[in-house]
Image (tube, rainbow, N blue to C red):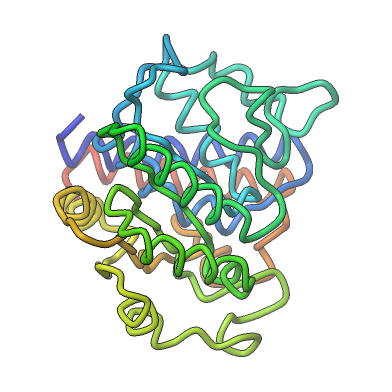
Length: 280
């Protein structure tokens, strides 16, 4: 899928799926998944090499979700991509479900790792990328991590390891939304200047608008051509994107909508869909 309008519609559909899933589950995270819907639309429908009918295809790109609490957005993208029926999205966080609150790779084909402990996925991704180099494989490893998540020291150990081993098949994507569960990132543990930190760690750095489909495509395509050292994409996103009363509010980090809020959110997203179709 390369048409910008189709990708925008897909991101909006993913957001609608998210609201319905979280309402049904009555628990889960809203802000981060909504903010990352554009990233997942671009990854699953433009950038990643994969086969939903053969999730273990050896030449597939590996997508490691380190900030596992935003996994509803991945489930929605996977369902839209054909990994499993969309009806299964309604089982999010239910007893016996494959769609757990944090991803469990043994439960659902198409997941590359189990996550929950923040920071751990950054190390997993570095190990997978190094193994690919040793095995002379051509696939890319893309690791998504939150800005609040990289308060964890383990993440910076992974970044040092990736740079030391010149893992140019590894792309870290930092969701720079400036919120975490109990407030603003800069008030809790300041990260800026984040781009200069990664440059000092000997990374290629690409900074972009993580809610702009065109910029995301250009950024990922460029990242795949860079060599000699690992890549960091700093994706500036709006948490709660697409739902006006959730945007930029840290309180929505780990809170699902109730019925009234979900109806209001879906109304806004349906209006957005019509605007996209009309070319606005």
